Image 1 (cartoon, rainbow, N blue to C red):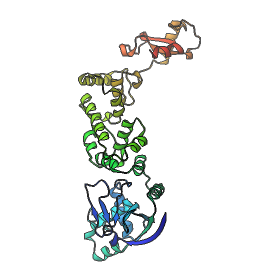
Image 2 (image 1 turned 30 degrees about the horizontal axis):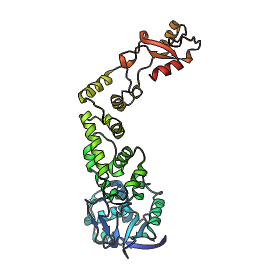
Image 3 (image 1 turned 135 degrees about the vertical axis):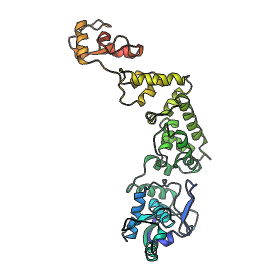
Image 4 (image 1 turned 90 degrees about the horizontal axis):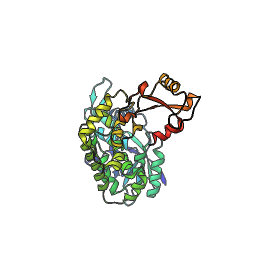
Length: 373
């Protein structure tokens, strides 16, 4: 990797700046059209207002900002792409382009056009320190990973995106990785996460691949589109909305794709599910730490998803005394109560309550065997 340091005035950077709001990537350019500000391996724009304004105020005060890296494009002589510094570059260009304002010393909002001519010239004459890098695609990508360890690190999915660029990823990002993207419009009432931080894309990839995201992305990297992934996502949430047409906040952390993969062919009744949900919420036997688990129980019918009320030590001791330490299943006698477990005589799933009359103690082996039946 060949690296040389240059000083680039902001007025040169912002010349012929273009930002296509509808483009997912490679729709942003500057430096007389010779600089691609958002190449395929770059993350989406994630700076908030405070971070953007900090960049502008740093420059206006004449303080140095971190060095940026531009990489020479492989096939275009004299053309470069931002290897590191995209967030700062976009903040600078958008400020000059009038996209946002900063506060002056009197706390008044000032767009670039509101600055005096001297202030504008001082801003435009500010020199950015930029390393120009030249090397193979593999070297650039490895350098991109290295320099992004510092600052605001890339998350796991952003790193995967950097490794598996192509038409497939571009199409996937158009569906899953933009604010108010199609995936968000469909599932935001049932799914947590921020699309621009790649959380929708990562979760969907995790579901469809059974946790093998890298293998899935490697398989489809050179596909012409991500229709398989997009159609899968739509099927998952069409199924969810059919079963639970009324969204609730406790649904958002449910791993719907995993449930869809396993139970999509099982017949459920939406009205029955809704009724049972409210019954469980009102059941004093169910002590849910996270009501999300109720949805897992409704679809799997596995008691492990519910935190059922336990017998008290006093109830257990009384049952032990009544049984004289004898396990009613294996009929062995135990003198140590710690070797026995309190258990419902009539299972909770069959209407049994956590009362003294419904309490028995079983030895550890019999309790485990009973629980697995």
